Structures are given as C-alpha cells and as structure tokens.
Picture 1 (spheres, rainbow, N blue to C red):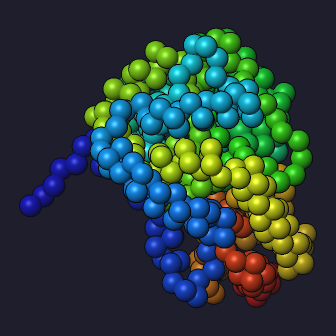
Picture 2 (cartoon, rainbow, N blue to C red):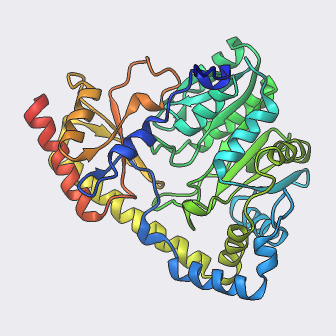
Length: 396
C-alpha cells in the first residue's frame, strides 16, 4: 500500500540526535552526543523506597485516573518552590503538570499558533522543540545566539518583518545546545520587545537548578506583569528523565486551553510518577540532592574543558557553561564539521553536528555539541583525547 501522510508530518525527519543515539548505543561508543542526566545523579534508593510505600499506602490513587491539571499536592509543593526559588507565579497564573517539558512546549504551540504563524527561536536551539513547532505547521524564524543570548537587534528586526509572529521561544539558562546563559540585560530586552510587539514568550527552563558556577539570573517569568510568559520546567534533569514529569506555569486563560488540548493527547500525566515527584520534593533532602548534582556536573564540565585545552588547545573555541549539560565547540574554518563528526564516530566518539540545531539547517555552521553529563569521567578523558587525535591526523 502507498501511504499518504499528513502535511504536518510528511516533511519531518527523525531527530538527528535520536538517530545518533541509536548508532552510539554500543558499549564501546563514547556518547558525547547524548543529553541524558548522569546516571549517578538518580536517587534510585529513594525512588525504590517511595514507590514501595506509595503502593502499600495509597495504591488506588497511584494506579487510577487523575485530573488533567495534575496531582494537587505536587502542584501545591511545586508552586511554593517556584515562588521561593524563581520568583514566579503571579495571582493571574496557574500551574499544571505535563508529561515532560516537551509536552508543555508542544501544547503551548498548539493553543497559540495556527498553521503559517511564526515562532521566533534562538538559533541554534533545542531540536525537539524545533521539530514540534514544525509539526504544527508554524514557520520558524531564527535569531543568532551571541555569548550572552539572542542578538537583540536582529530579534527586533524579526518582530518587525516576520508575518504573524505569535511566540518567542527561548532557553535562557545554560541553553541547549550552546551552554550559553542569557544575560539579565537581554532577558529584560526580550521581555520588553515581546510586550511592545504583542507576542508571547515561551521560556523553557529545564536546567534552571543546575547552576554550578556564577550567580543566578532572574527568570523572564519573574518579570511578567503583563501575562505574556509561559514558563516550562521539568523533573527530568533533577529526579529522573524516564518518569516524564514536567510542568507549565502560565496565565489562567492559557492554561485552561492547554488543559483541554492535553485531554485530547493523554488525558493526564501518569499518577505514580507525579506522586513520586511530590515525595521527592517534600520527604527527601531536595536541596542536598540538587547540590550533589551540581557537584557532579561541575566536576565533569571542568574535566571536559581541561582535556579540550590539553588535546585541542587553540585549534577550537568552546563555551564555558555555568551550568546545564552541554558546551558548544567551534571547529577551525578549514575543518569540515560533518566530516569531522563522521571521522570521530568511526573512532568511537559520537558528537552531534551543530547544524542539527539550526532553525535553517542550510545556514553556515562549523560547530559540534558536546555533552559532559552522560559519559563517565574515564570516557570524557579518552573521548577528548580521540577528538584531538582525529583533528591532528585527519584535518591538520
């Protein structure tokens, strides 16, 4: 049979990152291409203990349907946490639980954008969000990233010239893929431009608690007096990615529509993971656990940067992230990025070609994304050494 797919899906290709992950799943492949939390940060014993106690004490709640908005005790605990630590949650806002931050991003697009409307994105940006926007039929307009966030002049130009702009999508803290943190000045500028041109901001903050150096920068949502910011976060990087628990904080009217849209997708987020997340927040040493994760990523990021300096030296330039999971490595102009990535893969080191993250993959790019959270310390040392050998032997 000849299958005819919808216009929304027919032109989409599999995520390059997911495809690389398949190819790099062998035991001998060093996974600099991944983006998974470090396995040593999972509170496995706590999850095991909490799961057992939940199934003993309240199995029906954990195994039954729940309300679409999410498990009430989790929402209340999370609301308090966000107000205390991120200064988000105006009286006009509502918080609800989604099946991972990715669903929150997709729902925001679904309720705000018609086919052909424009979403302005950082470029490069998170491929999962870009593909979600593309699947909705939205037009994407990329604004180049600088070392302190979006190019504000080009952002305003896009707001002035792109048709039917509905949303600005940003990852202000430890951005995926660049590791860049948007400065306070630029966060304020992005908010003011959104207000000026009457568009929403989708602030994606999955790495917000993973700062391991420098000073915290206020969220854009904390500045929101106009009800124009949708704030999305997740437990994936601090508890478990596999549990698929995320959250959205947005104006009541927006949340109400997102809830209706979610009902048509999965009815509600699974109850057992929600209850686990609540126990994690209220019955575990949450602050101590976050500090542990920060220590792990500080060590791993430092190790990767030290080895990049040792084995690649001035041949490459790279971001020095203050948190998160990634750094962005610019190759010398004479080194073809795709060829370098393929050669590294043949030597057992998987990296992601930078053009995978561009709004327009045909734009110039000579960078690769490196992940330091997934590989072990030993793999980081060995993998960067191989990257240096590949540079010297094949591209000098």
